[in-house]
Length: 339
Ligand code: TRP
Image (tube, rainbow, N blue to C red; front, side):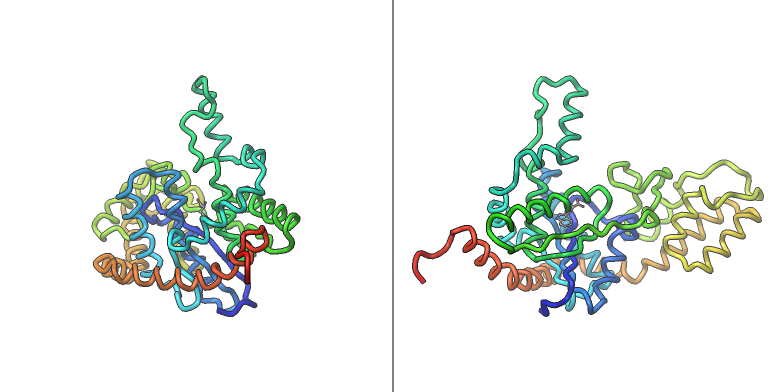
């Protein structure tokens, strides 16, 4: 691995099934970036982060399998990108402890996810504002900082909700560097544009928390059925329609070329029946995902192949992580007594 390339790193929490919104907002751009020889991507399955939100072992396992299969089926370039599972790199949790010891508790008190959980308890009138809050949730940003700092990653592509965590990773890195000397690179968030947010079945942002998602690799029949369920207004077939406020149109836009979008916009102005539009959207998306879906189904039949590729990725990640951990341990005074 050449070390002069810019390191871009991002994690995917393994709690769900990839949906069209994940694809458009995160997976597709990350896979495109993996083909750029000027950057060194590190992409990983954040299964330790998943434990914070999910205590169903089967779901975590299944999600890990589905997410890995999705990224591989979509053609992630694993010769360039280092693709691994967080729990296969024990240096991450080791570093988590070391940086925990320079992280101010007050900094964690300010984390959005923790504050939201406290606020919810207060609204419910709970006596204990920390009721039901685990140390995992509380320390979540420290684990995330370790993910990033261990690989000297500079650019972190994330959604808006994660910006604060990247800033915390910077704070933690700067604090460590101040005490022990310059070891860590200060990371920066690269925030995905608004345009990359896809609408879901009900017109709100497509998100697992709204339960309005369309899974990316749904079998053909089910995909059609779901697209038919997308909410539209009740204008009659021949009436002109407004593309800019239409969920169907916005989803189409995330997949089609500018020219195709323009053509469809004209059809809206002329009047297009919702049934026809839904059928068209289904066919378009189906065509777009069909080949990758076949590879995905094939990969799910061969978990050993996925496991093998994740292990290879972890070995590459550890080539970087293990020597760096020796340096970090040394820096804090944890080292052999004799050389
Ligand atoms: N917390 C991130 C999320 O929920 C996932 C994640 C874990 C991550 N570790 C990371 C993202 C490191 C970027 C860098 O989306």
